[in-house]
Length: 78
Image 1: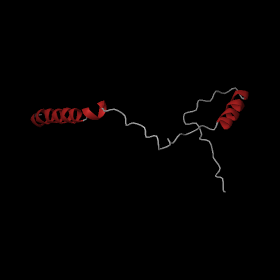
Image 2: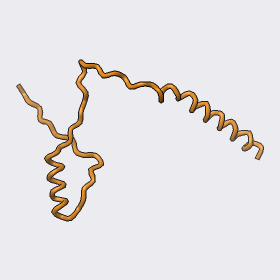
Image 3: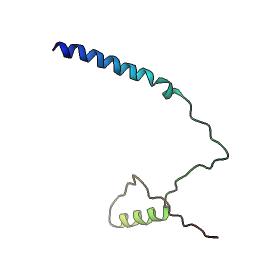
Image 4: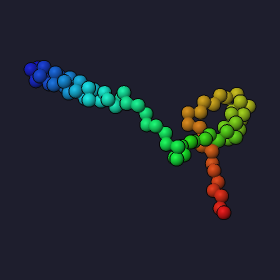
């Protein structure tokens, strides 16, 4: 019991110290966008989603997309 009474306050002090040291990161601002770098945007495959939703509606189901499928892009060879 005495060991527990000594161990719990030490853990609380360590937990509070860890929380206090993470403060500046939470309040920092987001980095500014660079105009020379194109953002990596994911686009959903709208045609596939529409086909699946239509088939689900036909069967009386409702689809909730958690991770919509990305659009497949074919590479052009020049």
